[in-house]
Image (cartoon, rainbow, N blue to C red; front, side, top):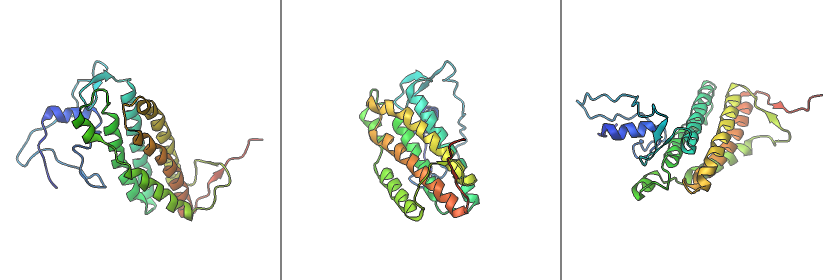
Length: 231
């Protein structure tokens, strides 16, 4: 594992944007932990900075905005989405599902999504934009995974409710959080402050989570609950 030295002030800025900057993430699909101190360096970084105590926070570009700004709303929803996927992943690991490595990669990509959102174009320099540019490859990967799962699934002929065992239900919950994250990102993309491919990724991710939830139910032999109009 390599190590690098980062100035405390810069690291605090990264932490304030929920570490949503791919400048410092490991180029590793499993997002392994990384040490920011060199050997023999006993410097300790405090997790709290107190800079947000007055209701403002910083974007990656250094711009101060109110915490209720659209940027931070979208970042919070994206962070919540990653947590929901992480919880679903734990259930899936318990059941021995083979697709958990995909969930790992998706959580890492969500860090890049947040990095892009946290870099509003109106205050970004070219160096900021270059560091946080979002790739289209993750969208293609999602589409391939969806197609592969769909080939194994029975045709969907009815509306289904979130069900099908703990793994499936947790993935459905992550899907609904993903829809909220997508809704909060949409106005930012329309205003030109974020990359349109970020919105496309979230849109495709909700389809993936729906599909893999059904796949998990099928593999576990769990019955999905079909919607029936109440009598």
